[in-house]
Length: 234
Image (cartoon, rainbow, N blue to C red; front, top):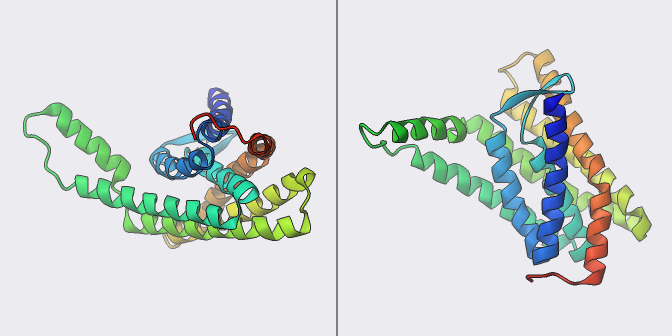
């Protein structure tokens, strides 16, 4: 039960940090969250835990929160700003992967036990197999691009403010499905048996689905902030 409680606390913390970033910095606070989310998610993903009776990796919450950010940007600032944020996230993910893997080629100081331990720990976290890195990049780009397109597609059909929850959820649920499908197929096809791949997919999508459903009140909160137009540090 401890993991489930912590997971819910982390869920709330992510959403509140997004709202705080928006309240402090306006549009750029939201854009800033995109690289934070993709980098933190790719670090947290190495942790495997049991949640709600399922085996899962961490990182699902913070990664899924990036879809809330692009939906807020789409709602308040338009498609182009949301697309810009997606590309910033994609660039940050590539940059982190390349720079941290280059750092692993350095030889730690001989005789320094701490340096050796730190090097091994960094290798565990950042030494990604090319297949996993490609899977992560492809899943991110395809799902986020779809989310921006889908949000504006549904906005044409449900344009009222009280219908934000419809366009937010319809776009995010499908985008999360695309993300989970692309990542699992590229990363694990031919490595795991079909039953194992299916279990990984179900677990990943289930948790992201919860995050997507839970973010609805926060997009309404962001709309109220936008209408007031007062950002403390913008």
